[in-house]
Amino acid sequence: GAVVSQHPSRVICKSGTSVKIECRSLDFQATTMFWYRQFPKKSLMLMATSNEGSKATYEQGVEKDKFLINHASLTLSTLTVTSAHPEDSSFYICSARDSREGGNEQFFGPGTRLTVL
Amino acid sequence: QKEVEQNSGPLSVPEGAIASLNCTYSDRVSQSFFWYRQYSGKSPELIMSIYSNGDKEDGRFTAQLNKASQYVSLLIRDSQPSDSATYLCAVNERGSNYKLTFGKGTLLTVNP
Image (cartoon, rainbow over all chains, first blue to last red; front, top):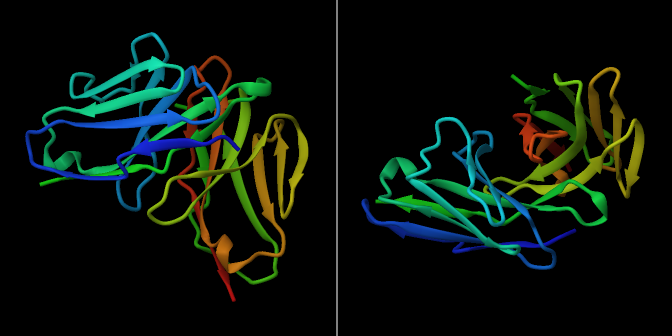
């Protein structure tokens, strides 16, 4: 399968600061990447769809000014949590769509655990 | 509202048995179907994808798709304790910009 990395894997920050999370497709180009968050023992929640070279599409209820997404290249998407607060503490996971061979498979990064103090 | 339904479990099977995981979906125009495995505290890992009716086998895993019944299943043969995880069914609708709709997952426990 395709490989997706995320950095950092874990981050602790103070309330009010901004945190940037990177998502990279390592062995394929991904025109579409996705950002999810997951609270403990809860389902994955899609936050936004990130398309290379265009603005991200946010799901209903997700604040686009708080969760800034940039997909500047075919292998990199970033999520910036601005003015983070304790309620933003969660497990953030990206995925990338591998369209080689005409498929639709999405491969997930290992996730970033964010703790806001 | 597109829905993907799974039994939450827990589903408990003895080591060496066949584990059967089921999923139904509400949207008839769904095109692609996926099974992911998620260990506690980790991100989902793709196990199988299936796009057409019938069976698809990969090692100990077999995915089965029946579009007429809007049903997709995953069979795990010779279950191992390392298979203990939450299994997520995901469905993609053509034209949805490739978004996946996930079920809530079935927790599988394989007892040694």
